[in-house]
Length: 214
Image (cartoon, rainbow, N blue to C red; front, side, top):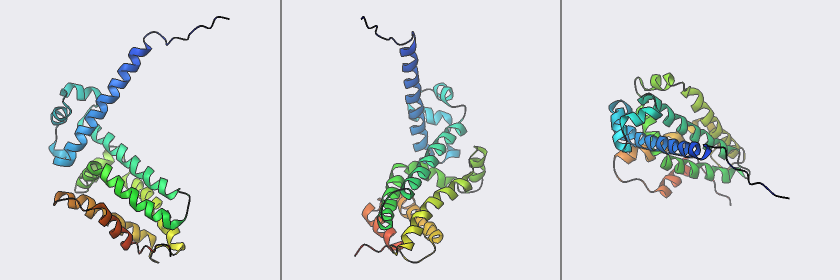
Protein backbone atom coordinates (compact mmCIF):
# COMPACT_ATOMS: atom_id res chain seq x y z
CA UNK A 1 0.00 0.00 0.00
CA UNK A 2 1.44 3.31 -1.04
CA UNK A 3 1.36 5.97 1.66
CA UNK A 4 0.99 9.52 0.44
CA UNK A 5 2.86 12.22 2.33
CA UNK A 6 0.61 14.99 3.57
CA UNK A 7 1.64 18.43 2.41
CA UNK A 8 0.88 21.78 3.97
CA UNK A 9 -1.65 23.84 2.05
CA UNK A 10 -0.17 26.16 -0.53
CA UNK A 11 0.98 29.39 1.06
CA UNK A 12 0.95 28.04 4.65
CA UNK A 13 4.76 28.29 5.16
CA UNK A 14 4.68 31.92 4.06
CA UNK A 15 1.78 32.70 6.40
CA UNK A 16 3.57 30.99 9.29
CA UNK A 17 6.71 33.01 8.58
CA UNK A 18 4.70 36.24 8.55
CA UNK A 19 3.05 35.32 11.87
CA UNK A 20 6.42 34.63 13.47
CA UNK A 21 7.81 37.87 12.09
CA UNK A 22 4.83 39.84 13.35
CA UNK A 23 5.13 38.31 16.83
CA UNK A 24 8.85 39.11 16.93
CA UNK A 25 8.24 42.70 15.84
CA UNK A 26 5.54 43.14 18.46
CA UNK A 27 7.84 41.77 21.16
CA UNK A 28 10.63 44.19 20.13
CA UNK A 29 8.26 47.14 20.34
CA UNK A 30 6.92 46.14 23.76
CA UNK A 31 10.42 45.55 25.12
CA UNK A 32 11.60 48.94 23.87
CA UNK A 33 8.49 50.76 25.09
CA UNK A 34 8.60 49.08 28.49
CA UNK A 35 12.15 50.23 29.16
CA UNK A 36 11.45 53.74 27.83
CA UNK A 37 8.23 54.24 29.78
CA UNK A 38 10.02 53.08 32.93
CA UNK A 39 12.98 55.40 32.35
CA UNK A 40 11.18 58.57 31.27
CA UNK A 41 7.54 58.10 32.22
CA UNK A 42 4.72 57.33 29.81
CA UNK A 43 3.77 60.98 29.18
CA UNK A 44 7.32 61.97 28.20
CA UNK A 45 7.65 59.35 25.47
CA UNK A 46 6.51 59.47 21.85
CA UNK A 47 5.94 56.70 19.36
CA UNK A 48 9.04 57.99 17.52
CA UNK A 49 11.09 57.37 20.67
CA UNK A 50 9.80 53.82 20.90
CA UNK A 51 10.58 53.24 17.23
CA UNK A 52 14.12 54.53 17.70
CA UNK A 53 14.71 52.28 20.72
CA UNK A 54 13.28 49.29 18.81
CA UNK A 55 15.43 50.11 15.74
CA UNK A 56 12.48 50.35 13.38
CA UNK A 57 10.45 53.05 11.66
CA UNK A 58 7.48 54.77 13.35
CA UNK A 59 5.33 53.37 10.54
CA UNK A 60 6.33 49.87 11.53
CA UNK A 61 5.31 50.58 15.13
CA UNK A 62 1.93 51.87 13.95
CA UNK A 63 1.48 48.72 11.88
CA UNK A 64 1.50 46.76 15.15
CA UNK A 65 -0.17 49.29 17.46
CA UNK A 66 -2.61 52.08 16.68
CA UNK A 67 -1.24 54.44 19.32
CA UNK A 68 1.11 54.91 22.22
CA UNK A 69 -1.82 54.12 24.51
CA UNK A 70 -2.32 50.78 22.76
CA UNK A 71 1.31 49.91 23.50
CA UNK A 72 0.80 50.79 27.16
CA UNK A 73 -2.38 48.69 27.20
CA UNK A 74 -0.44 45.63 26.01
CA UNK A 75 2.32 46.18 28.58
CA UNK A 76 -0.18 46.52 31.43
CA UNK A 77 -2.21 43.51 30.27
CA UNK A 78 0.88 41.30 30.30
CA UNK A 79 2.05 42.60 33.68
CA UNK A 80 -1.31 42.38 35.43
CA UNK A 81 -1.87 38.85 34.11
CA UNK A 82 1.60 37.70 35.16
CA UNK A 83 1.21 39.07 38.70
CA UNK A 84 -2.22 37.55 39.20
CA UNK A 85 -1.05 34.20 37.81
CA UNK A 86 1.98 34.23 40.11
CA UNK A 87 -0.03 34.86 43.28
CA UNK A 88 -2.75 32.38 42.26
CA UNK A 89 -0.11 29.74 41.60
CA UNK A 90 1.30 30.15 45.11
CA UNK A 91 -2.17 30.05 46.68
CA UNK A 92 -2.91 26.80 44.84
CA UNK A 93 0.37 25.13 45.81
CA UNK A 94 0.04 21.84 47.60
CA UNK A 95 1.90 21.46 50.87
CA UNK A 96 2.38 22.96 54.32
CA UNK A 97 1.53 26.63 54.81
CA UNK A 98 5.01 27.36 56.16
CA UNK A 99 6.55 26.29 52.85
CA UNK A 100 3.97 28.33 50.90
CA UNK A 101 5.07 31.46 52.79
CA UNK A 102 8.64 30.92 51.60
CA UNK A 103 7.40 30.29 48.05
CA UNK A 104 5.30 33.48 48.12
CA UNK A 105 8.25 35.60 49.22
CA UNK A 106 10.68 33.98 46.76
CA UNK A 107 8.34 34.20 43.77
CA UNK A 108 7.37 37.78 44.60
CA UNK A 109 11.01 38.83 44.66
CA UNK A 110 11.57 37.01 41.35
CA UNK A 111 8.50 38.74 39.89
CA UNK A 112 9.76 42.17 40.94
CA UNK A 113 13.08 41.40 39.25
CA UNK A 114 11.51 40.11 36.01
CA UNK A 115 8.83 42.78 35.84
CA UNK A 116 10.80 45.74 37.22
CA UNK A 117 9.92 47.99 34.27
CA UNK A 118 6.21 47.12 34.43
CA UNK A 119 6.11 47.86 38.16
CA UNK A 120 7.99 51.14 37.69
CA UNK A 121 5.52 52.18 34.97
CA UNK A 122 2.61 51.24 37.21
CA UNK A 123 4.06 53.25 40.10
CA UNK A 124 4.45 56.23 37.77
CA UNK A 125 0.76 56.04 36.90
CA UNK A 126 -0.31 56.15 40.55
CA UNK A 127 -0.51 59.96 40.55
CA UNK A 128 -3.16 62.35 39.22
CA UNK A 129 -4.52 61.19 35.89
CA UNK A 130 -2.70 57.87 35.95
CA UNK A 131 -5.51 55.74 37.30
CA UNK A 132 -7.92 57.45 34.95
CA UNK A 133 -5.63 56.54 32.05
CA UNK A 134 -5.50 52.93 33.19
CA UNK A 135 -9.30 52.90 33.43
CA UNK A 136 -9.62 54.37 29.94
CA UNK A 137 -7.60 51.40 28.66
CA UNK A 138 -10.38 49.10 29.93
CA UNK A 139 -8.64 47.88 33.08
CA UNK A 140 -10.56 47.69 36.34
CA UNK A 141 -7.45 48.22 38.45
CA UNK A 142 -9.21 48.03 41.85
CA UNK A 143 -10.71 44.64 40.89
CA UNK A 144 -7.34 43.40 39.59
CA UNK A 145 -5.64 44.44 42.82
CA UNK A 146 -8.37 42.83 44.93
CA UNK A 147 -7.87 39.50 43.16
CA UNK A 148 -4.10 39.64 43.59
CA UNK A 149 -4.41 40.57 47.27
CA UNK A 150 -7.02 37.85 47.80
CA UNK A 151 -4.56 35.25 46.51
CA UNK A 152 -1.89 36.49 48.90
CA UNK A 153 -4.38 36.66 51.75
CA UNK A 154 -5.25 32.98 51.23
CA UNK A 155 -1.61 32.04 51.75
CA UNK A 156 -1.22 34.23 54.84
CA UNK A 157 -4.52 33.16 56.40
CA UNK A 158 -3.54 29.51 56.03
CA UNK A 159 -0.12 30.21 57.54
CA UNK A 160 -1.73 32.07 60.44
CA UNK A 161 -4.05 29.15 61.12
CA UNK A 162 -1.02 26.86 61.38
CA UNK A 163 0.91 29.33 63.57
CA UNK A 164 3.58 29.70 60.86
CA UNK A 165 3.45 33.52 61.01
CA UNK A 166 2.47 36.21 63.50
CA UNK A 167 -1.19 36.20 64.66
CA UNK A 168 -1.98 39.41 62.76
CA UNK A 169 -4.74 40.37 60.31
CA UNK A 170 -3.79 38.75 56.95
CA UNK A 171 -5.19 41.73 55.03
CA UNK A 172 -2.92 44.11 56.93
CA UNK A 173 0.04 41.82 56.40
CA UNK A 174 -0.57 41.80 52.65
CA UNK A 175 -0.49 45.59 52.61
CA UNK A 176 2.69 45.75 54.69
CA UNK A 177 4.36 43.09 52.55
CA UNK A 178 3.59 44.86 49.26
CA UNK A 179 4.76 48.19 50.72
CA UNK A 180 8.02 46.58 51.78
CA UNK A 181 8.62 45.08 48.34
CA UNK A 182 7.75 48.36 46.61
CA UNK A 183 10.10 50.30 48.87
CA UNK A 184 13.03 47.91 48.77
CA UNK A 185 12.81 46.64 45.20
CA UNK A 186 11.37 49.58 43.25
CA UNK A 187 12.16 52.67 45.32
CA UNK A 188 15.74 51.66 46.09
CA UNK A 189 16.56 51.05 42.40
CA UNK A 190 16.52 54.79 41.70
CA UNK A 191 18.65 55.65 44.75
CA UNK A 192 21.65 53.40 44.29
CA UNK A 193 22.80 49.78 44.12
CA UNK A 194 20.09 47.16 44.44
CA UNK A 195 19.57 45.64 47.86
CA UNK A 196 20.79 42.03 48.08
CA UNK A 197 17.85 39.72 47.45
CA UNK A 198 18.65 37.56 50.47
CA UNK A 199 18.36 40.68 52.67
CA UNK A 200 14.98 41.48 51.08
CA UNK A 201 13.85 37.90 51.70
CA UNK A 202 14.91 38.05 55.34
CA UNK A 203 13.16 41.41 55.83
CA UNK A 204 9.92 40.07 54.33
CA UNK A 205 9.93 36.95 56.51
CA UNK A 206 10.64 39.02 59.64
CA UNK A 207 7.80 41.37 58.74
CA UNK A 208 5.42 38.42 58.59
CA UNK A 209 6.67 37.07 61.89
CA UNK A 210 7.67 33.88 60.10
CA UNK A 211 8.27 30.94 62.38
CA UNK A 212 10.54 28.27 60.87
CA UNK A 213 9.83 24.66 61.59
CA UNK A 214 11.36 23.46 64.84
